[in-house]
Length: 391
Image 1 (cartoon, rainbow, N blue to C red):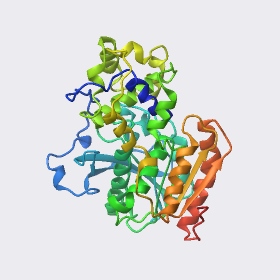
Image 2 (image 1 turned 180 degrees about the horizontal axis):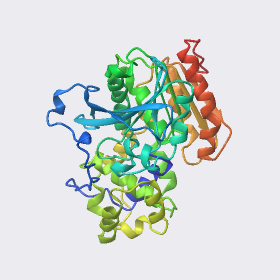
Image 3 (image 1 turned 135 degrees about the horizontal axis):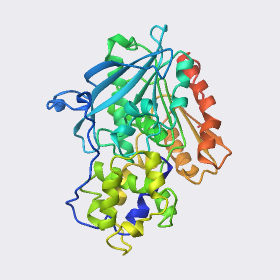
Image 4 (image 1 turned 45 degrees about the vertical axis):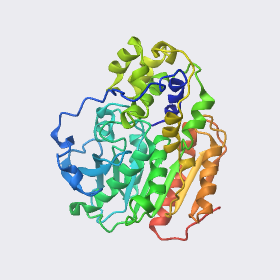
């Protein structure tokens, strides 16, 4: 997800979600590589079990050797799915610490997932993802939106992230089964990371996390979408993709496709495998009004329930791992208030949390402003230094 996932309600607001159940989501074209095909008995495996693994060419990332690992995970309905993560190991470092880095995906095509986009130029923050390697750490970059690339499904992304870590630690060739583990990400990747940290005590209680570092978190999708409303926006392509992604994960609760007109159905087909740049370019001069079969303003409590289910501010659990969160104080895309509220809830549960407020309004500038301290926080946890908290 990215900042534009919150635009999904600009689609909801024209009545896309008022239709009864019976949606027909359009899923991405499956990757033809059989490595990405789930086995028929995947439900017999436990979350985090390794399905298959392979070495990969990492010529684009000198000084590394690479692996891809397929594993069993869980979707938002509690059903078994297969996940994939890409691991880059620093050559010459034995038993390195492990960082699961949740990259920015912002897309709905399988070729946009990190397993592909690390190598085809589509990954937006590939250089930032490599920073842990410079510290001698291994990195795992999961396809955290799952096999249907369910852009916007935050709870899903947290479960896939946790299962990717479980799987990586089971691959003995990597030598990280006893290594300290941190998870990190910003914006959509920060949302996946924060959800993984909050879910870990109940979803993966055996998994010890040394650090959770997340920034630019879209913590309240419903609030953000309501604030945006139905105004035209240059990010409409990503808004439309977010609606399609949420429908893929919640086809009965969020039947967006049932409310698309002929133009909307064509645009859905046109973009079903698209990555960020394609979505932005082709969405510039389009808007929700052009895509809706009905212009009547309607509300759906079921659809809003899905947004709340994927909003960290409404989650009743809390992380137990040391957690560092940074957020732009005046960020208009991912508001500060719900993040601060989430942190206050975590603190009330006794979580060891440090909130770093960045006095910046621009979303991506806040990423650069906070990541240095975030990586230093991770390194301190790897050294078993005292855990700071400003609860």
